[in-house]
Every structure is written in C-alpha cells, then in structure tokens.
Length: 196
Image (cartoon, rainbow, N blue to C red; front, top):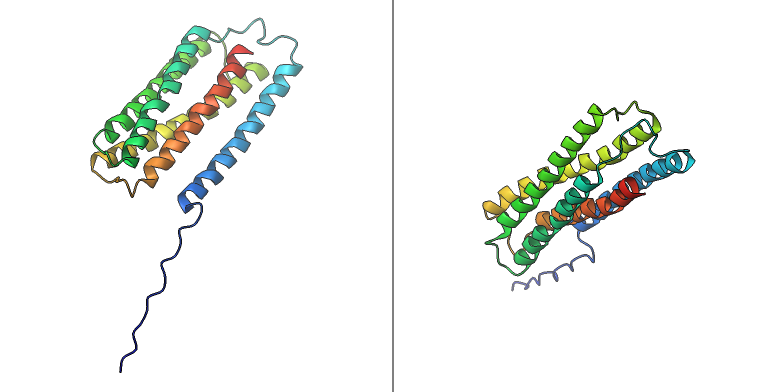
C-alpha cells in the first residue's frame, strides 16, 4: 500500500519583498549621501560672508523654476503607468514610462545648457566653495537623474515587449519608486540651492 504524500503548505509571502527591501536599502544609502552633501553645502553657505560671491554669476532662477516643473510633472505619467499595470491595463504603460523618460531627458538637457552658460560666465568647479559646492551637489543629482532616465528607458522597452503584467511588475514598481525619490530630492535641492 502506498502512502499518500501531502505537499507542504505554500510558503507565505514575506511582509516586504526582496525587491522592495533592496530599494529601501538603496534609497537609504542615497539619502545618506545627499544628507552629507547638503550638510557640506549648508556649512559653506552659512559660513560665507556673501553667497554667491559678488564676482560670480547668479543662478538662473526663471529657467530652473520651469525645469523644476518639468521634473516634478514627470512623476505623473510614471504614477499612471504603475496604476494601469496594477489594474491589469498594460496598453498605455510603455507610453507613460517613455513620457517620463523624455521629461527626465529634457530636465537634463536644460540643466546642461544652464551649466554651459554658467561656465562661460565664470562659475566653475574651481570658483571657490560656491562653484564647487554647487556643481558637486547639483551634479550628483544630475547623475542620479541620468541613471534613472536610463532605467526608465529600459523599463519602457520591456513594457513595449509586454513583459509586465498585473502579477509581475516589480521592475516597473521599483523604477517608479526610484523616480519619485529623484523628483523628491530635487524638491529639496531646488529651494536650498536656488532660492536660499
């Protein structure tokens, strides 16, 4: 007589998935990096007699304000893409993620044009603590935006191929969370560097 083998009960899903845990660790590390950079900026800013120094150009507030609107608005289409895939509506996901990537690329292009103009007017990394702290802090953010735009482009390509479903979309979700982080970080950096 054969004994009947009872399969073990299915394992319960962990309270936090490995992908979310990895994203929490990444964003925590990135937050610590930027906390240090912001601390450096504040030390230089608060100890300076004049900020910016009189012989250096002022930062372009109008253009950067419009650019800020572009970056913050880019969070809307990726949120729509994430909502659509969670509802099982994958039709517009690729277009929404592509739009987010394009808006991120526009942000970088405008920032690059801004930096080119500032360098021509004498604001460089070698312009003392003002120039160095500006380019290190804002440049570090720009590198993060570039990495996120690259990630968004890959996610959009995969979405075009139909990789994501309602049940399997962790890569899209983690990409969206990272994009929210990049946008939220700029919401802190813009007033600190350009308005304060």
